Image: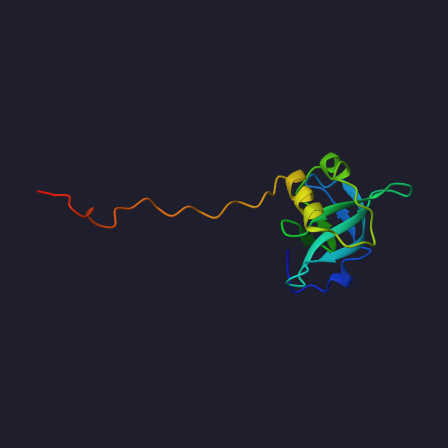
Length: 123
């Protein structure tokens, strides 16, 4: 997602899934505690429905609307933590797992020979 966009300008924008199906309207934007970068959007999925959290990182603004690269059903099934409250690290982790955006473990170091083992003889 473009990081130079003011998160306040996302509120009220229509949101669509990967197929172009309307999900709802952006209700709130949540910022990363450490960086202040917009990280999650809460999308109101209907008049009497709850808000669904979607990650902003793989999402993008297209023609003034938020395009979320996930299916509507997956978005509607996202864990419900309520809006207007801080997301805990555990809740964020649950959301990342839900969307299959698990944080990858750090890459392992390549397995190299850094020289001969002391006492070994090579011909």
